[in-house]
Length: 200
Image: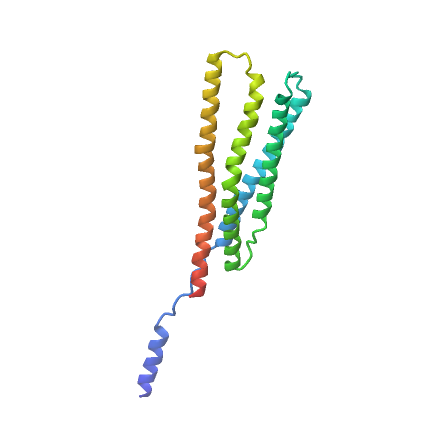
């Protein structure tokens, strides 16, 4: 009987223990995604601020001597749109920056999900509003600038401008937003998996 107990004890020791859930290195992936999102928002905001300053400088010291007030109003409107968009991008930058990479997985997941929801809501109104207002301002500006241009020039210019706007909004813009969305969804999916493993 004693031999049987010894054999039983040896056999039980030889059974491998159930491995603990493997915890992927999400901190690094999350930090990389966070850094890329921050860089995009910060760099975009800086470019818009520089654009607003450049257009303001042209309006004041450019020596264009436009005849109509609404041409200067259009330039001021473009500056205002750029500054507003820069403020939105800086706010988004700060929101991403507040995501705590060292938080517990469930809290970290909640922070990324909150940001994802915020960003989707923001894009629903911000992207089309920015596009419409910017083009209205450009249209107002071009009334005087293109006054007296030939029909051929107007047709060529209009085709190029509209084509570029459609490409920028429908193709390039959607591609950039899809890349951003994929990055966030990837981090969220990994955090979901980790939270699930920890709850088992």
